[in-house]
Image (cartoon, rainbow, N blue to C red; front, side, top):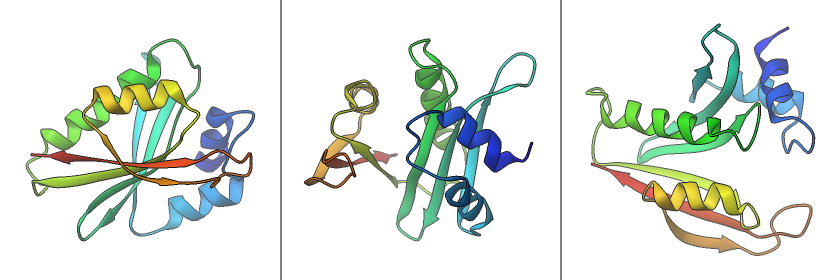
Length: 138
């Protein structure tokens, strides 16, 4: 099974991205990935992000099973990797977009220090708003 298929499988039912979206993102030269693997090496989750001259933007993040703390472990591990990487120029602006109805994700992001900077009304197909959030890593 190729990596794009594995990522789509992790996102599961209701996925916002198609297989083609994953393939395109993985082939984008500015795209980077961070993977969360279990004790047996199984892929439990991922962060896909892009480098821009003024910072990083998280493009997609998902875990295989929700409600088990894997999302928090994945996200905190990702943030720590950025904070502790001497090759990352700081201060660094990290941006993301989240569905305004995704209370669990928003709580995690706010607990991690992200702040809401903009709201896109009725952005998603289901009519919900998108929140744009950012964090400055020093």
